Image (cartoon, one colour):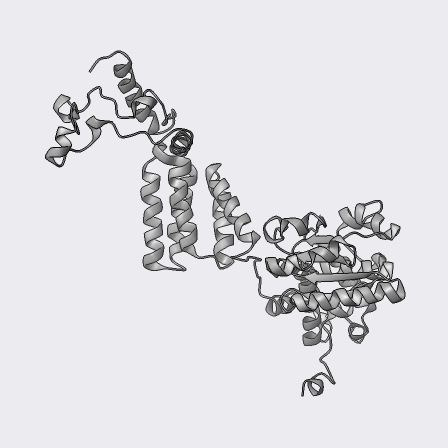
Length: 432
């Protein structure tokens, strides 16, 4: 039954049909394959180590791996981490051994989306990479520091591929129209703004650009218009809620607020929402930031952040975008202080570095007669009996005089600083 299904397979998409097989046909990634650049020198030398290509979709990771195999005349085994497992790795290794034993031919094992391999699967590659039985080339859209195990990562050279430029995409599109037999059947021409729109909406992804072009050409018969391109491909913002882009965008959002730039903060916020981010995730980050980066410089920031979070739960999207935007603007323009964060950090460091000192007896609550007899609460001075403040030690004796909270001269925290300095002056002068 399976063989019947694939007797007449569907035609490959344009992006696959025009995939470059030689370095001279490859456009983009000049920092790697330009004249005198590291990857080109390795290919020209004919000596390729195991590699890891890290970059966005459609930037040429798979194509470069194919080109390397073709240029060096190595056997090429293409695996997908989504569909392959340890057995497939074993089969590839056996084939690589036969290639070398009988043909003296090296083997490249290419694993697309290698970050989807679990630790056991990645471990299975180690001995064969280390012994040189296979040349492993992995491709990933995710940060390999987090997704690839250390022992394997240390045996591979990591190269970062960049999103393709507009000029790169233009050259790739023109080449496709020149070399593909199917496209030659059409008198393809772009009406004003159509090519620019195709390139813009492709977002640096050659695969998206080429396959969108093919659909548009077949719909129009070759006269490609801006409107058709927009209909074929609705604008899609690249965003993976479980991937690195998720963390990149939230990082840019938080840092923009911390840096008091409401415009940038709104931009990154909307980028996340348009990409499908949960508004409650953004709201929770605002609540954290209100204490971490603003704190007592403007205590209302925390109130507003919590209100925005509750509004998101109450009204939901799309209306809660307004609540998030309001909170984002306010927090970005609020005076900034990280004194709360630093105070917490100092306390944690002290607790880590010192023994768990007992609570002084005068601070303990004497809820039973036995506790009273043991001295619990003895000598405690009730501040309200002394006008609201009285000199008294609250830290363990071993930590007496230790300062954790150091307020700044910013916003409302300036008043707290003045109040704290007044209290500490009284302590230092032994005045009540």
